[in-house]
Length: 377
Image (cartoon, rainbow, N blue to C red; front, side, top):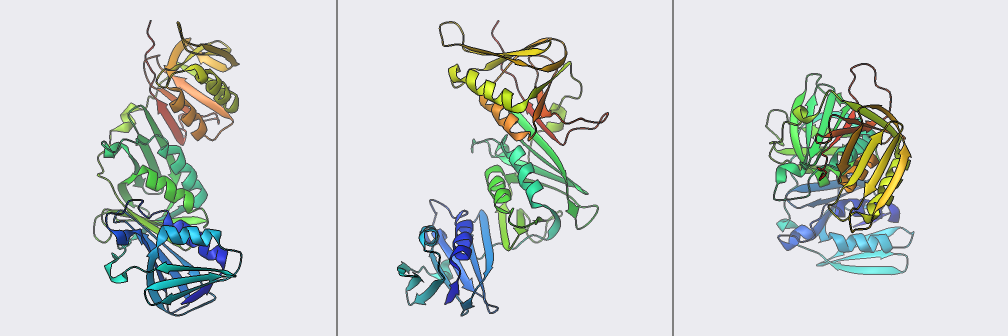
């Protein structure tokens, strides 16, 4: 049926297999569809009714045809093959994979039972793949993991002209990132609620191409309720969630009583050390005084830890406490050598941003809001 380089096949199969369900509702959804087109290309695809993935690669030789085999098994086999050309031949109800002296026989599945991939929504514009992957990672960290609250498991994408705003919250923190993109229509406007984990995996996997094309319908029609991404021969679609989302902009404070700037890596290491004595849900306390911050965890009869760090601090003294994991995830997301924390009071949310200078009223492109934990007096 076809011959292809081992690395080309293994990479394409591995990428497509990512979207396959671990517990398919019907057996055929565990399959990966391989199609050799008339122009000597191999198209691999997977679909579970929520997410679809399709990748096209060049072949050395090939005869047009379609076959369906177990996707995860094929991924394991191709990953283990030696670095030689791979021959894939369909023989009745079986497919034979030969590479060097290795030979595998797989059972085929009924192609006619496999669902058609969804229609791609209309192309809306392009964005740099590395910028997009970084922005999505920064925001997806705050998406909820509780499937009983589906609207909090998504990343909200708002598009207005050449600005894309991504936002996610799990009620305890909120991450917002703005980035520029190139819309096909200058006045394009749309809102989409995308499953957070799916978006994070997709954005990370599409950095092989320089740009990602986003396909999204602004007014319904073809591809309504879906969003699509294409880059470097790979295309994927996912079903959108209900667009309902908290009015997050009103949660972001605009005035602050104090600002602290710390070296990010030193802050991260100190929080990790102090948190060693913190129980799962007990906070790390931060006391900002002049040129230092005191980090503490544990109390009373428990193990305790204290560490002091230098800080560039302006404003009223403050004692505030946070879930240490949420604080660490925010520090990991700001992508800066200097972390800036801005406070209003000890009981109101703090804003974490990178420490790059901001001109006048300019808003940082990334903000991570984190709710404090009340300290018992």
